[in-house]
Length: 196
Image (cartoon, rainbow, N blue to C red):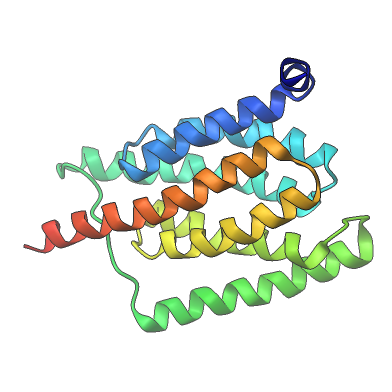
């Protein structure tokens, strides 16, 4: 029974596996997270299209392009003579702006999904999409606080995927949430070391 489910949902399974690899590389600050992110995004475009998560599907298109940007940004930092791109902290004013952007995008995207698609949970879908846009940009710039954004986003996303019976993705997001806590603590230690 499990084997037949895997065969039937192989794109989602491959997306989940590549997502886990992406997350591992992200926690370890390994530049290969970006090409793996490109692969994961392409797979999840198909998964979310079939589940009618249109904002989530659009988010994967964004992930595809932000992965190219992140790869370039991190690669440029490494080739500029420094060992790696350094972790930075967001100021309170930056965090306020980031949160306000997420709220604004949630209402705009949610309105569009609610009125122009058959999305079953438009505002929840919009929130995870908006938060993910911001958190991924923060990752590309190496803001420590991007992990805190991911903890909230992953918990909400986990509930939405459970609602849509995307069980492999639910498992992935349980791992994502756990790894976001680990990632935050790991990056925080590295940030403190860099400051010494």
